[in-house]
Length: 139
Ligand SMILES: [Zn+2]
Image (cartoon, rainbow, N blue to C red):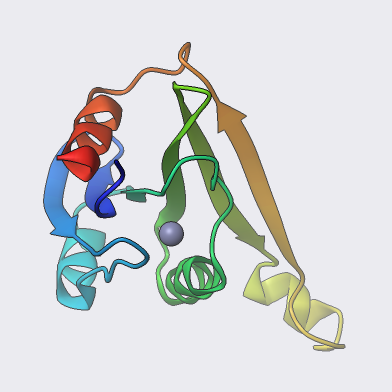
């Protein structure tokens, strides 16, 4: 039985900066840790587990990812890890935001363009933290 969302802050080398324990429906990333990490890491991966079959980001996930994508110069990615038919699926999400310069160049017309890039990965895409986070969610 899925008991709780478990999250991790991971950098581009796969180094784990923090583990976050949530409840069955939610999880809060520690702002201070992310700010600290942003000074050293090139890429910030906000990984966390979801209950089975829910591989999409929640509304809160989206706003968290969007806020950090705006706030940091680093590449920020959110990975949702969940079981689908007893297979582990990882959905990788990131927002591509129009650079400030090009927005200014086109006269700041409307808002900066934002595009969500998402990719679903199965077993072939294997990272060491994936199985462990799932395991902890079911304990
Ligand atoms: Zn989530």
